Length: 261
Image (tube, rainbow, N blue to C red; front, top):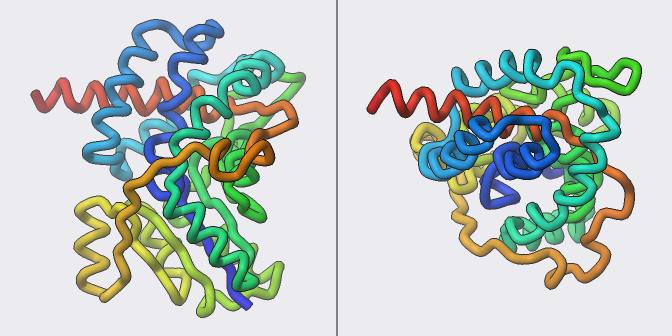
């Protein structure tokens, strides 16, 4: 028995789950206007060029500073009000169909994302995934300390799915993995059936060299219309990593573009 592992951004949904939350967090007073404007610009840049390893590392470091002291209850309330409306229209119809096919074949489906677990898990439930691997933040006395307990990125993703496979008795040779980014090569290389989805230039080149399948997902669809009312999350959500990522990645992509202009 194997499983199917899916990256989230630009693989299951059509844009960055982190950058999507810039405006709601600005309206809630967690980030300033400058940060949300840059995150909006960065969303466009991300859709065109993606984010490389250096940008992701800078996002992680900036995240530690920015979210320290944020009130978890406030974050939970903001995300609970906005997540469904923001994410629901962004899910690729092709991805949902593929998830359904894997589950019908008896394979568990796992979403593997560097976004915060508090947002990745409800998105996973919306699209029919069985479990998630995501970034986890440290919380003390109801506030984010600014420290990261687990950063679900690069080789950490591969390590997490290996541990999960060992725990559940899955044969990695019979597992599938889907991603759009060359930063997920460790995860793709860990399974017997790697698939590039909407790949960036680096991953497209590797896929061609190794004979990996390449899929192009082009049809975002509203889960509310595709899956009905069951698509809407029913429990409170929290997503500090998402709000932080909107400001942090936005800042660094914007700054890099300005330096290169």
